[in-house]
Length: 333
Image 1 (tube, rainbow, N blue to C red):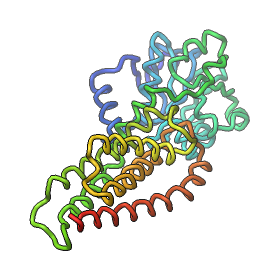
Image 2: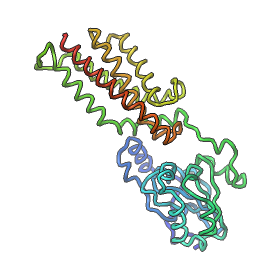
Image 3: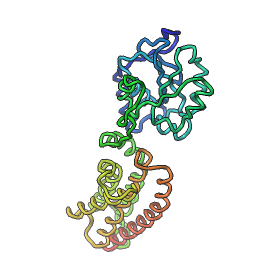
Image 4: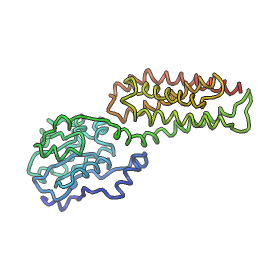
């Protein structure tokens, strides 16, 4: 099997369909089914001496790897991670020791390559016990760089990763890429908030009016801006917002947005409505920003749980107070 004739062959070049699929999944469309079939793939013209790269069956992870293997003849072993990326799958256990051992044995990898070296992404290390892989299969695990773009340098340096290759970054572009999916993920929260302010906008001086006035449209716009503050502004300016907790960062971003809306006279005509929006906007921003924690390297699971115990009750209280004040402001019109 040194020629890899019986193994599916892929190229390092992505086509229009691959790019279109990536754009769709960034917006959360068909994300749960964006998978490749687990198993062994050949890239280039690999032989028994070629390297074996391990990845997840989430197609975006698979495509990122093969794109960065241009000019390399190698084998790609795809684990069944249920369509989840390497980092998340390692935390969930699907990119793990048992799955890797099963795949190595099922394809008889020891008969395909003559060496005993497999290369795993560093972000999958938490799910794989290298010593157990060695004991069960005889293969030595080499943890590659954090980013697939450093693979070639990693190999040329004798399968050693320098400090920069081991560093996990979460820069502006990384955060920007995650915004569309998070924006769509919270769409039902947004629609629910729209519906609530829509209904409140019909209340006036103790009775229900027949049509929504201009302030109702303004209320919907304020909600959308508050939502965008948590989903877009907070992630983009994450390192510059005070505090460690995402809920606090989101609250501060929302507060800044509320002041800007106040400056442009977009927070109502009476004191109750103004206070209501200074309560509602930051709390919406805070809640949506907190939902970004699962996409970030800034937080840990224990830290998120601890934050939620404090933040969520406060967000509920602020929301109720803000809604009550908004209703009172409508009754005074």
